[in-house]
Length: 152
Image 1: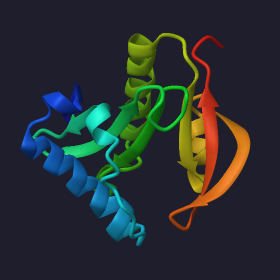
Image 2: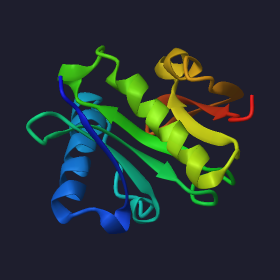
Image 3: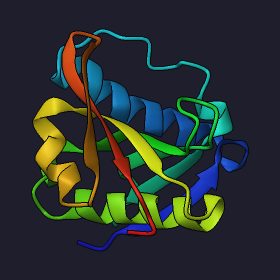
Image 4: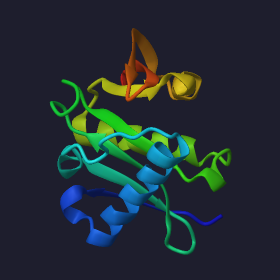
C-alpha cells in the first residue's frame, strides 16, 4: 500500500483535513470503542498533526504531538488512531516512529509523555515507552501514563 505522510501544525491544516482527522477519531474512539467523550478539547489548535493518507488520499492514520505545557510539562503524543481495515500492517509503528522523531526535532531531547490505553501498553513498550506506574480510568477506559527518554 502506498502511503503519504505529512506533519502539519493546526494552523496549516485545511478545513477538509481537520474534518477528516476528527471523523477518523470519532469513528474509532467514539463509535468502535463505544466511548462517548469530548474529542474537541481545545488542544488540537496548539498541536502538530501527523497525517497518513492512502493512495486515494483518504486519511487512514493520525496522531497529534502536543508541545510542553498543554497536557504535561513535557511534550506528549495523543489521539493515536489507525483505520480498522489497515491495523496489523505496521502502520501504527510507523506512525509512532514519526511522532517520536518529530518531537525530538521540535523539542530536543525532552522526555515525551503519553496517556496510553492500558491494553496497548505492550505496543508502546515496543517504542521504548516505560510505565510511570500511574494507572487511571479516562472516559471509562483503563489508561497508564508512560514516558520515553530520547537520550536513552
